[in-house]
Length: 311
Ligand code: SF4
Ligand SMILES: [Zn+2]
Ligand SMILES: [Zn+2]
Image (cartoon, rainbow, N blue to C red; front, top):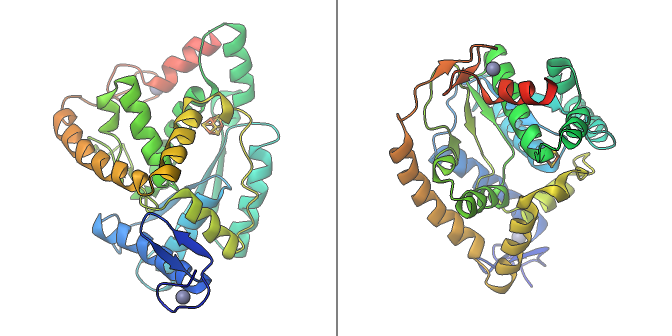
């Protein structure tokens, strides 16, 4: 197997495109793909102050690394910053935050950490125990996702960020789309896409996903070659998520029919555009009567959840 570009021995064979790359050309095509995604989708402008939602895993490190390089090359005025949410998942987030701090120190990147415990008085582990005790049939990821989205938006706004980048990759995005499809939740898919949000009032910080067209397998290899200090720890609650089964099914299909993931993301984008048109403007945005954060109802999802869990 030889590199498509230089004919030296290849380290990866991309079955979906029939290209193979040596280490040097794998890195350069990967970087180019991410920069093209940013440019084609008009994700960033020179003056944007951008933060990256970081976890200590490979994808958010790559996103931060590439945006930091754009700043170094003079393409972005401000140096990107990292924002991490410590959910309070023992044996997992505490460890991945160690990797993250190491990474930020190495690249001299400002890191802001916020914790669910400081924000809501308890850790995610505590909330999961309460939910189990109350037989609330809530999956840990549902609690985690609501709280994390809330905090990321709140603190991105407080830090006066214009954009918040996340490390969602091609596999993550396909899984989200398929999950919404299986659950019959078309409106939720309107919130997907390389730039998220149906409505963009001033209280929401726009989210961008530079790794939208990057398969998981490739981001894994990229972070290994770049020697990022990540152990890619796995969350102890991950196995409880429906997402896992969707991931396995998509991996099997991709293995049998190379290119399935890319064609799925392509058709999902068409669908997302239609869904954005159909659902934009339907919801009026208010400020939550309890916490003041933006919501389409009187009380936001986070406050509703806190109310159910604590009271
Ligand atoms: S797997 Fe679920 S609980 Fe764990 S960090 Fe991800 S969303 Fe949160
Ligand atoms: Zn090569
Ligand atoms: Zn609220």
